[in-house]
Image (cartoon, rainbow, N blue to C red; front, side, top):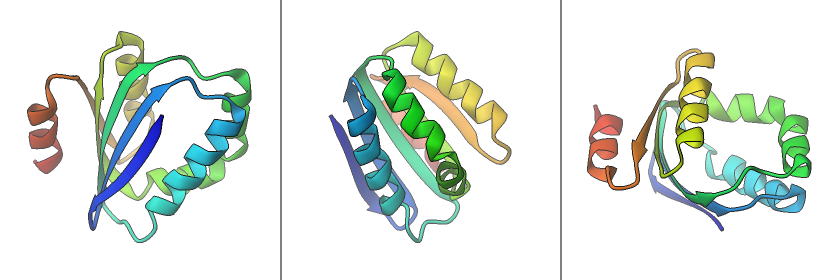
Length: 121
């Protein structure tokens, strides 16, 4: 499952669960990129539940669209990730460390209030 809600002028709330294959990844990226139109200095609250490692097909689709994804990510300066898997926490924090100007912080699923406070600070 994938859901994007534009919850403010510069805010996206994203929910992701399950497994992504190549076809699903195309749909996810299209929706994600279109939802970010007009956002500057944005924030993302990302909720990831019961997420499996994407298929090779999904990773290939993502790699093929890296230029678009770099433009997308530059629209945001903070991402809070609510997640129940340690490997996803580590991966998200590594991503934040690799992208200049982007702060990413991972929280447990039950720490939504803390994540909201961090996004607002």
